[in-house]
Image 1 (spheres, rainbow, N blue to C red):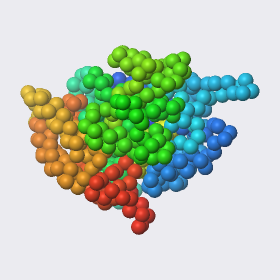
Image 2: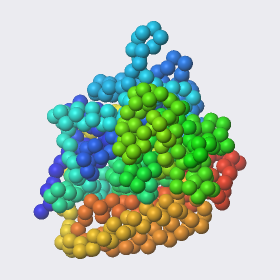
Image 3: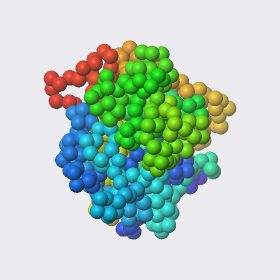
Image 4: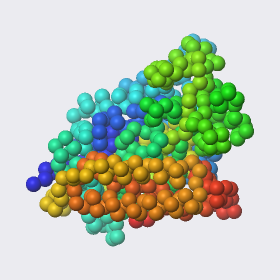
Length: 534
């Protein structure tokens, strides 16, 4: 018989969104369990270098932050959501400081201590609050420490969600209500049943659909696939952001070189030291990420080179070590001294701008199911996320979701019997190589055909391969006991299909979606979101 556990709130994901929501709820005596697929620090939050955008500079303004976000989003941002998020910037930073997060400070001309603000691509002012060049790590460790000490929070590492459990909503015809999830307890190799009044997806993005990614290996689109299979709409999955500068080294495929490096004067150059960004955009290195990534991709393909270089060696050694200690130390481990030589870089999949469609309280199409952070499509990012707006979104919508949950949770009753997970007709796999082979094939053709530059033919080829893989994976899933790797692959092939389907529907180039068949933006009518319904 399968173990069964009951909770008030089940949160899937242990990054800034998941832990932010957990702490806000637990402070109101709500019983919360947080699942992490691997270690608590395996989230994208932990690896975020840059920072969190918020208006603190007297020369800056909320209106300017809104305008920059709308501009980066290429006509697809929801202006109301942008305003909602940006106006919560300062209070979100203050909440993090209350949780123990220490941000980098400086002395102003009057000798007073204030937050040091970086400037990143797309921003017209310095407004990126940071903790040196490891902001996400500082945020993640502080929230984990608070959550571990909280009596109302249970943290479970190495637990993967197999499937969400729903039932018909008795109050709303044709709508489902979530009542829990089947969860793989990986250390004990068994599927347990977790019932909950509320379930929140905070499982991050889907950037491991590509062979080159800046994300941790956990970013396999689990929450998006779970929500899709349960009946939620997804939106704007064609807008996969490729970070322009990932360290190019055979032993460091996933190491990000922060945009803040360019914000502090770093130059993109070819092997001979010549710059090229001015040919693509008057903002040069500080153009939005989609423009910079395409420029690098263009130069690499045009010249047949493996990478370009990011050079900040013209700055003083003291400045570089003070502002970028993590990047300096990491590059040094690969015999690259960034105080004396340029850094070899390539674009890599970095952020999923689309996701599970939500409203301004993080509610999805399924009653009592919420989606917070990169897993969600709130309308903030539109066709391209502006740098350092992502952690801000996590914090703001964790707060919004907590407000809504606190209003309703006392009224929720779960009287439905949930059947145990049935493993009676499956066996242990004797062909694990199938999983790893399919994983590699999927990520390679997504990179080749659904990457920075697309065409109708490339998308069609990718869809043909997805259809074949889906059949293979479904057959495998139906015959063998689930493992964490199999669950990831099953989710990733669904997410890949959603990305391709959205890309095929958009007959224009906009933001992060660039196609050679429709290279211009269609301004003949208002921009439309791409929405898929199960």
